[in-house]
Length: 505
Ligand SMILES: Cc1cc2nc3c(=O)[nH]c(=O)nc-3n(C[C@H](O)[C@H](O)[C@H](O)COP(=O)(O)OP(=O)(O)OC[C@H]3O[C@@H](n4cnc5c(N)ncnc54)[C@H](O)[C@@H]3O)c2cc1C
Ligand code: FES
Image (tube, rainbow, N blue to C red; front, side, top):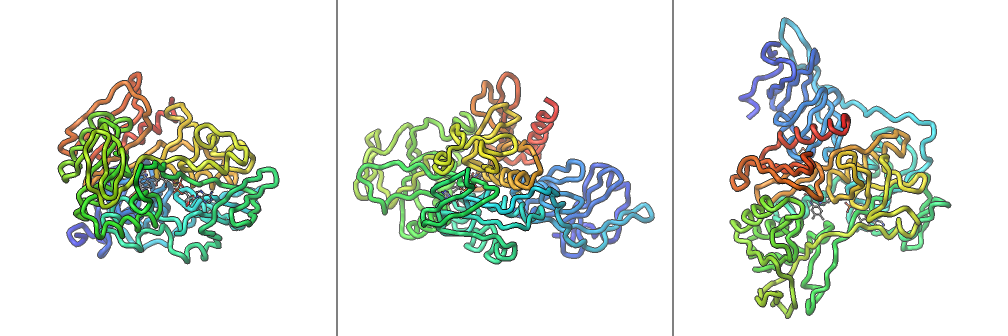
């Protein structure tokens, strides 16, 4: 508790906090992190504004601190959330040195982000997509001082939401409805962000700079962000009725599964994907028997490799999830699901988690350059002037792998939204963030930095079974990606090392 920690108002001898170190203390009831960087001392709130991660266990790089859980980054000078997934600042306190001691004084008011000065700012900005990248782009536009009109069109019925939570705590019943929207309704009105829900953009005219929606409306833009994400791949199951089959992408989808789960005893999850397995874990938390059916021999082997994939399977088996691997669904007959291997499983309902397909229709129709996604340059600009793309639908030149890549990760989508927003305002910032994602299975978090589609060696340090490991994926001796379980600092260090490689190839 904070009462057991040193009260930083009483002063800390300078010798107790050498250069580069940090000290977790308190100011009254609040936990405060005191950090020394050279001659500077910073006192900031000790918890990340994303999910309350412990910043004292994070990584300090110069005057920034990175959260150990999902790698948000904060300025120690101003508290600003510099990199998603945190969007809100941490509190800063004034620090004073006297008598060879450092004292934490009063709270400082929140500092404004440095605006981007550019005479050629767009006269209006349109964002297509109300998800991770769209919301964060709107947030960054306002933070950077853009005060022109911002409109966000979303096909969703709900405002931008914390999508990763939908398969985890929310589905498990441990997160409340109020936690799911990324921002409350008045956030949009206060910032004059025109959020248009239940509206699908259907036609893009890049010459006239107009977007036409399915409901017959026209939206003009000066700069446009395409942030339409991805849709679940739909697989027809012979004999299944639509009321038996569920997909999970939106808040409404998650609620529908919860409603169905209320009277269910057993479910079949088709697909050993991240979403499929997270859904399995959450339904186990609701005491529903879960059978996973997937063609793979090892869950997620293509992404995590054979060792970690096999361990993910055993984490789930230890919670009594039954796997039917190397199989698919042959037919559904009422509540009986027949598998290609001959077995029949009883299921009150079926959840399909077999991957997603990027939403490309608008970009294709608008004549943008495509390559298994919307092709963007290092500034996230598409082939059409003034049109940017971010998130699951965008393929960008990744400086770390040297390839153009497209990923489906929350933090990447948000960081791309941030960079695209700044570039719409003329910042000319390259998107160089090392890809990061996390996945949660019961109490086991997997953190993954980098990007490895093909590797020639996988090295496991530690013990995956004991949930204490670092798994390194290499090609030609070069580290492409690193996955960790309960080694958060190693994950942060791996990210920093990859960033360094980008700067000094
Ligand atoms: C259940 C679930 C759990 C996940 N968990 C994790 C996780 O733990 N870690 C992780 O890294 N990633 C996770 N992801 C992936 C992550 O959510 C995505 O990578 C991220 O949301 C992509 O952001 P985006 O902005 O590209 O798209 P989205 O967040 O999907 O937003 C796209 C938006 O565009 C709208 N839209 C689509 N077409 C149109 C159109 N034509 N007109 C108007 N609007 C349109 C959609 O309605 C939606 O509002 C998860 C995804 C799901 C579904
Ligand atoms: S809790 Fe800090 S980034 Fe998620």
